[in-house]
Amino acid sequence: MIAIDKKDRWKLTKLFQTFKWNYLPDAILEGTMGRAIADDAESPHAAVLEAPNLQLSIVGGDAGHPSARRYMEQIPKHTALFFGSEGWVELVQSIHGGKLMEMPRYAFTSEALDPEHLRTLASRIPADYRLAQMDLDLAQRLGGERSRFAEDHMVNFDSPKDFIERGFGFCLLHGDQVASVATTFAICHRGIEIQINTKEEHQRKGLATVVAAHLIVHSQQNDLDPNWDAANESSVGLATKLGYTPQGTYPMLFYTGSRVLTAVARAGLKAKELIEG
Image (cartoon, rainbow, N blue to C red; front, top):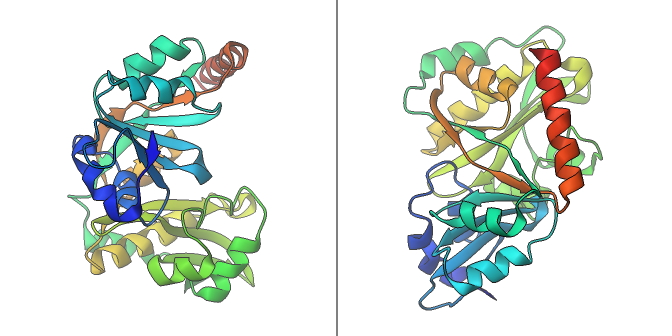
């Protein structure tokens, strides 16, 4: 496959028309993040939209095309795979069976969000905390923090300055410390993807609900759909609280690169389910 210039990525749009779960394909196709590759720049049959910073690939088009198999044969370990067309799941399973983890995602729609309910949630700022919209100083502070709390924010932007120019976010401060933050994980002309994190010592105080509500309201005020795409039950619970409507699950496969690692990971998940159940 060959790299597709940003100005030509729109030619790949038809290969991802059935992908409805989030706005990552839109953002990559618009050239605001990631990269795109395809078998041909002018008449593509199979293509991949990649977010290298996330080790994430969205595949689309003809899974039976020779370039599709070649790509799947060479994917690096620890790659998350999303599917924009039929046939790709079967393809990767035929090549890497036993080295894949099924990690279903939870889809939601924002169509029934109630602005008044969101404003009520946004107003519930606990004592000793203050709300701030992300500015360059806060973005630079967040970008300079090396922690699991901060690592997923602004990852799809070139710099804190680029984030402030194209994205937005809200945080709750405890003194001078950023305790909880909600930012645009990805952005396109249609909408945004949402990233929310709260530091462990500030959790279970409703902070994530407050910053999420502010981000969603701000998004809607700017004619952007605030999409919610959940990876776990905690995120599902917050989405429901905010007023999102569940749309079921959709598949994501994680390529571990090792049968042993896959078996160990599956055993760990099973043990976790048994303990929590």
